[in-house]
Length: 220
Image 1 (cartoon, rainbow, N blue to C red):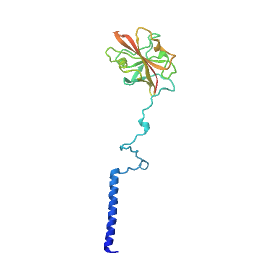
Image 2: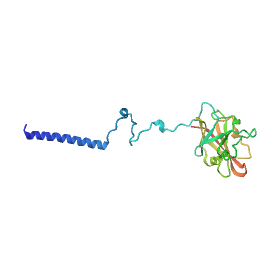
Image 3: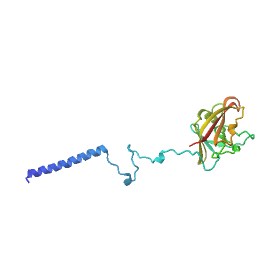
Image 4: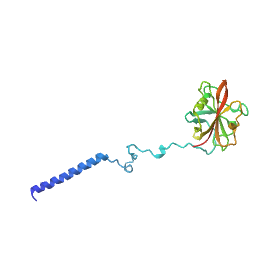
């Protein structure tokens, strides 16, 4: 083979190598450098945006339990959009038919009262869990916040440490303060929470024209 022919073959080989390298470089630039697989590197799999993908279990909100294995006495109450982990007190009844209420103090206006004498706890199969809270004329008490923010469909969570039971408000009613309202004291009906606060017009210390009552059924 002549010297000219050999030079031509060498030049052709060089052009093929250069052309191949240039194409490979363009391909990597367009597609970016491939990341090592999660199986070989132990890294989190990447999403299309390049951010690690969280396991599905951590993305789903925890379920709110609508049943418990055994009844409990509530120590905190959370009302969505109104109050979180409000404390619960358990005053005795001042008379056989009247549940005790929180103290009329600065601390007392922020807590719920749970009526033990009713004999119904969260998780029992029937009857109303009785709660009440104060309404203050200056609008600063828990009862005022419930009147403003708790509607039908609102969530109420009763808890004792890690144990909790979730409810949805099914009914909100206003009743005259001077007439008995036996539905509130029901022990035989469906399991639910019944919350009462003073409402309407304030006539004097502790005297209001109405009561507002919420009923809530267990619901996840």
